[in-house]
Image 1 (cartoon, helix red, strand yellow):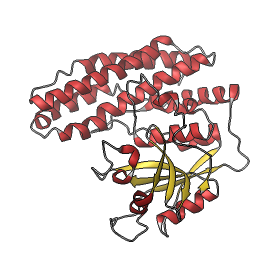
Image 2 (tube, helix red, strand yellow; image 1 turned 30 degrees about the vertical axis):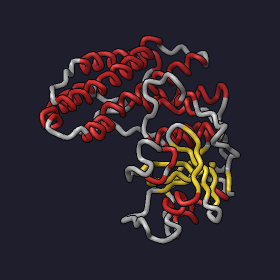
Image 3 (spheres, one colour; image 1 turned 120 degrees about the vertical axis):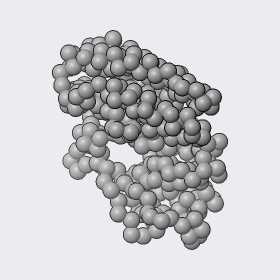
Image 4 (cartoon, helix red, strand yellow; image 1 turned 45 degrees about the vertical axis):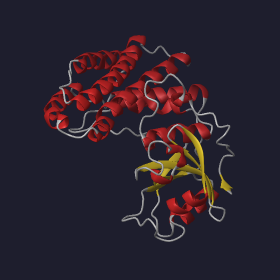
Length: 325
């Protein structure tokens, strides 16, 4: 078994971001896997959350938020680089892991046992995992995915890597990245980590949308309502994932980050923390109402988005007043 960090899925303790009592149990596949990868490698992922303040409504979706690679390099001395596949995928993964480099790769959730009940053996859905351990000959793999650390073996391993031939042929190779420690770099901790994180927060506050993103989102959502209500309920999942879940989960991370700053002795504005928390909670409620509206073919009241717009203005205003940007 090629392995970077000795971890056991049965005893692995996931990060508090994926703990109990969260409004959004999951964010998106890339953010979740990086959170657990950093945690598994012994780093504090909360310090890298300043980027969450700068998400926007991008015409027909909210920003699919990801940790900026430059931020990870600055805080943890970890660089993320694209891997160009030219051999069988499993061989690439094994060689990089043997060199101490976790591999971020898009795989088919149909063969990922941790997705039992949603995609495993039910639906072919791509999702990013971070491979920490692999044994190609023994057909075993240890990987970070969604909320934790998991194991895969046997036929699932053979199918997901197609080691028995093109039983499930791909049209294109998956997108693959490897994580490499920067030469002469060092991961920050303690006060230097907090200071560097605050500098990132100032930079990202300088990149927040010029105009309140909830205004165009409400207009778009209202315009989409007619055809959404004529569509099958399955469309609800795709639409809400690209919109409500993205910003709802992202702003919960913003609130979590501000509470972490408080714990580090930083005077982070409590009103901003509560504003982003309220956006997150209200969005989860709106998502349930949206599902019922589509099931009953009845219009959805979008007035809660006006309240969210006001909370966004308040939260961002408080952060800029306190930290600049």
